[in-house]
Image (cartoon, rainbow, N blue to C red; front, top):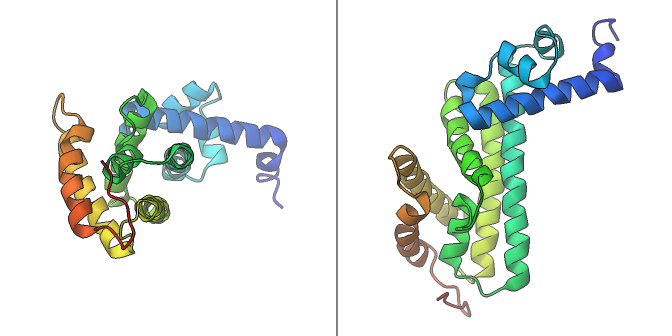
Length: 210
């Protein structure tokens, strides 16, 4: 192991690296990709400016790690929702899918920020190849969760139908996020109901939600 890489693997080095990733992830949520710069990350992490180039190969490398932190956080919150809903049962499948993809009616600002970050990550991946693998992994997990939610409600949940639903949601949410004062939940709920009942009809023995 080289003398340069050794300090990075020490507990202090790992703490500093984690602090930089956390700072970059927070900046992504509050200001998007333009907000993540060497100086702003170092200042937020309260570390020397040179630390961003010492612990990461490039700014893109740091951004990719930060984007993964935010993506994993959103997936974690969605999984928590699914566990909570499974415990209570009787959830309308359209409302459940809306809540999973957009956030519940009583959701906090974090879910909204993570929703925006999800779509910013998709657009950034078109220009930054290092984000494409992350996007595909997170997308596959999101598909799995939507499929599980539909299956639990007695709806068809094969990948083709799930991807059609997600593609529809993507377009509606992107349009809503670009308009002032528009609630993405309200924009997609009625359209999603028609799509769920048309593209993912009840399986034999399924129970229609209210």
